[in-house]
Structure formats: C-alpha cells, structure tokens
Amino acid sequence: MLNFELKNPTKILFGKGEIAKLAKEIPQDANILMLYGGGSIMKNGVYDQVKDALKGHKIEEFGGIPANPEYEVLMEALKIIKEKNINYLLAVGGGSVIDGTKFLSAAANYDGEPWDILRKPVRTFEGQGMPFATVLTLPATGSEMNSGYVISRRGTGEKLSSGGPGLFPVVSVLDPEVVRSIPKNQIANGIADAYTHVLEQYMTYKTAATLQDRFSESILQTLQEVAPKVMNEEFDYDAAANFMWCCTMALNGLIAKGVPTDWAVHGMGHELTAQYGIDHARTLAIIAPSHYRYNFNSKKEKLAQYAERVWNITEGTLEEKAEKGIQKMEEFFQSLGIKTKLSEYTDDYKDTAKKVEQAFTDRNWLGQGEYRKLTPQDAYKIVEMS
Ligand code: NZQ
Ligand code: ZN
Image (cartoon, rainbow, N blue to C red; front, top):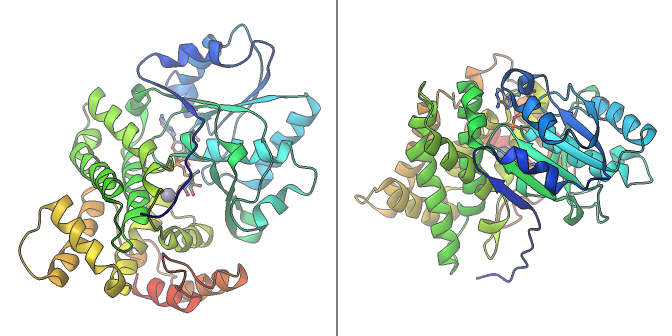
C-alpha cells in the first residue's frame, strides 16, 4: 500500500430536516453571502428552508450561477463579497454552485488576478479560503466534502480545475429529500459521475490496498443497486439516501488513499464540455470505455477484478473477463439513458481529438494516468476511439 495522509475537516449533517441546523453551525455574527444556481431551489422549497433556518443571521444573496460555473458570473459575486464585507459563504445547489463558491472562497483571500489561481497546476491554492458551508441539492460530484473545484471560461473555451487544503467546506448538509425534485437526466448524470469517480481511483493496477478496493467495489455495487430505484418515478427515500452518500464517499478522498489514481477520463471529458457543452457526466461515459480499451494491457487485471467482484463474471480468461467488464460498464451507463458515443451528441466531431491533444499539450499534461505516461497523442487516440 502506498503511504498517505488523510485529513477531511468537513462536518456532514445527513438526513431529512437537517437544513434547520444550519443556524447553529454558522457563527451568529457572520456576514453571509448565499449563492445558488438558476432557481431550482425556489421551486423545491430548499430556498425557504435555508432562509428560515438563517432568519436570525445577516444574509445577502447571489443567484444565477450556471451549470459548469462561469468565471465571468463568479467575478460579479466576488465584487459583492468585497463591497459588502462578506466573511462567510453558503452554497445552496449542485456541484456547479459549490465549485463556484470554492473558487470565490479562494479568490476572496487571494491578492493576485483570480484567474491565475486556476492557471497553475491543480492544488496550488495553499492559503486558507473564506469559510463556507454547503447545502447539497444534487448528489454527483462529491464537491460537498472535498477541496477541489472546476471553473469554466466560455470566452476562452477553457474548463480548469484547482483546489487546496484550505478549501474544504466547514459544514455540508445532505438531505436526501432534495432528490425528489431532480430531473431524471440529472439523476442519471449524478450516478454516472460518482461511478466514474470510483473508476478513476480503482481502475489502475493491482496493489496491496485490499480495503480500498473493497470500499470502491461496494460504492460501485451500491450505485448499481439503487440506480433503478432513484430513476423510478416514485420517490424512495432510502434509495435517495444511499445514492447521496455513495456520491459523497466516491470523491471525499477516502478511496484514493494508498492507491494509484488515474483521472485521465476527467481530463479528456472536461475538454468535451469546454468544446460542446456536453454535461460533465456524459463526457465521462463517452471517454471511459475507450480509455479502458486503449489501456487494456496495463489495466486488465483490475478490469477483470471489477468484472468478477462487481458484476459476478466468473467465466473466461482474464482478458475475456476484463473485456466483459468494460461491456457491463457501458451497458450500465446506457441503462441510465446515457449515450456513450461522441457521435450521438454531435455531428461536428472531426477535429475534437486534435483539440484535446492540443489542450493537453498546452497545459503541459505530458504524462497522465496512473503511470504518468499517457501522452497528449494517447489522448488523441482515445478521443478518436470515442
Ligand atoms: O441551477 P439550478 O436551477 O439549481 O439547476 C441545476 C442545474 O440546472 C439542477 N438542479 C440541481 N439540484 C436540483 C436541480 N434541479 C432540480 N432539483 C434539484 N434538487 O441541476 C442542473 C445541474 O446542476 P450542476 O450543479 O451543474 O450539476 P453537478 O452537480 O453535476 O455539477 C457539475 C459540475 O461539477 C464539476 C463538473 O465539471 C461540473 O462543472 N465537477 C466537480 C467536481 C468536484 N468539485 O470535486 C468533480 C467532478 O468530477 C466534476 O468535474
Ligand atoms: Zn466527475
């Protein structure tokens, strides 16, 4: 097992009605800026619950953070933070609102040009961000319990990630009741995103990290088990709760400890969102099967283990099981109504692979994957296969 350090300071309040406890978690004298997205929280009652919980607090609002949070919009929020002497942020939304809030948390305590925080390689914000809480409304990214974030800048066609140890939420409220109002395509996105988060930390090479493997496999199996229930019209609280907790556990740092990680699927996927605006999770479903086929030789042992333990595939050679595992993964994405080929999203895909290769080169991402050997040319070939 590889050496590791683990510190996750985020407090989780999980369950029905937990939003009401926010008042006790946020200091009474805080000057809060509440941030949200396009308005779903107005329709599903979450806005009212938050305002009710914080009626004794001083609170300003900033709405309109779009999916794939946009730099220009966030700069407007940064102005309010400075003008109104805000000292505590509250994200109420999905990954986009939470990520945007994390960026603001960093930018508020950063003296230079905010975009520079994102231009440097991941995890360069070493300072302590402005404290923030989150009320999660869409299980998917794990952003509610990690310190990473992804920001888009449409003007330049960039989608960049960053993070830092001072950017964990202080407290996050996870009330599975929010799942009731999520459109099915977004639930499918959440399942596929969390599923791929596990894959990126699992589908590498075999190590002695037995417990981490079992953690990962249990999240994958639980997601598979609850998927049909949360996709069903009828709301099932326990299925929603398990879905929510799987998403958080998939990317709160735990399963990455002591094991090699890959993250190349996300690297390529982010480029597809930057180029076409395809939902984050769908880009992962497009890239993942090709990535695993392209890197079959170095990943086949883990692929076969995945097939055996997660899908109960016991027949065949190691290679046959590994290929069967990839097929099962693809079928799982498709069972959620997610298409797994780029050509099913756009006819205009001719130059895509070249652009991804160029973006990897421009960012100096010359060695990605668990061996840090995946080149921009490899990314080109994988996107071509997708
Ligand atoms: O904007 P509103 O009106 O709130 O609507 C949102 C949005 O349109 C809607 N929604 C959210 N909760 C809802 C709801 N609608 C009805 N009822 C609810 N309870 O869903 C839409 C999508 O929301 P968004 O926040 O964009 O989705 P998601 O949570 O999937 O976040 C995606 C972003 O997170 C980044 C992605 O790249 C993307 O930018 N990621 C962040 C990560 C992290 N911080 O660790 C890791 C991920 O890999 C990912 O890259
Ligand atoms: Zn993701």
